[in-house]
Image (cartoon, rainbow, N blue to C red; front, side, top):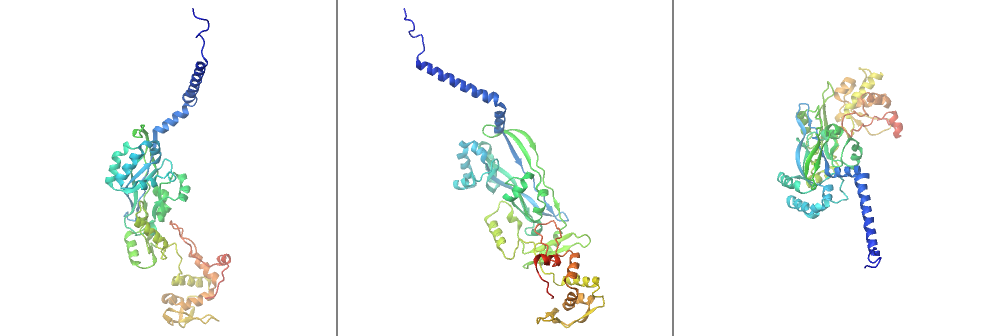
Length: 440
């Protein structure tokens, strides 16, 4: 017979173990309820995001043509080796294989690749460019192993090509990597930190017209980030082309006339104001700004920025010069319209002009004496002395009033950036700058 209570109850250790197991099961049950019921939608969306990728499809940049549809700025294909930093971090076990392939195919050192992949410089969900402008052979080598190496991207990009080199460079401008300041301004229009944008000339003025609209490819991937299913595709919309009033052959003639000189030539169609040529010298080659840039390109760009001849300035619109003898027309018209002179009014030209109390003479062309001269002959012979006398008789306000009618001192509103207005020293300008007007 067994004694009562002998072995029938639970020991303290067993009770403790059962209590721990019971609490653990309750915790697991609560956690499962939280994951599968209370927060099911939240984690379902996270799971979908882990399996669904959105790839941005970049549009082709619009081309630029002359008035006869001859290509001035087009596009060429470029191969790039990139890494999706996010995918690489999600698949850390594959990182050594990724680095090995990049080293072997691109001929880069591990240190060079690691510098490119510095997390401090990485932008979430944007590919990191390891090397731009790789060869076609390198591109296909990477493309063949891309599905098996998470994070590896062999990309085809578009690169700007200025087919005539430096021809019309100041008009066309150039493209380059978007700056942080420009990105902050453009991101409301869907721009990304890795975009290429116009940085000068018409490329900058018509940036949004030329850029086009991005597309997207939404895909489902497997656990190794390999493409499984295309869910949605929105094709990119190419940028619009620009057709200029510039005539290519006339532009070439203007630039040839400026070889080894500093200056500008502008040719207008007098019937409608079309700009047929706009040349500025010295010039630069905008292809140096297109990505990828070689060490030589970078050196050139730095030299242009430091050059005292200012090759990056469009002398036709961005620099102010004295008008010279062309201003005689303005003074002559002011004299006729104010009645200070008539067509028969003459001034005597002894070959030089003297102001009362000033010893220095202002001489006529080659010190030549024209004798008595009226306005028609004064213009024909470009007689300085005639217009010195007329200018003294008119005074500054009458001259500036006529100059304003010719829009001197005002911008032309040409569709190019960095236009300067020059100076028309009228009363308002003199009061603002506290400058005085002196006879002569």
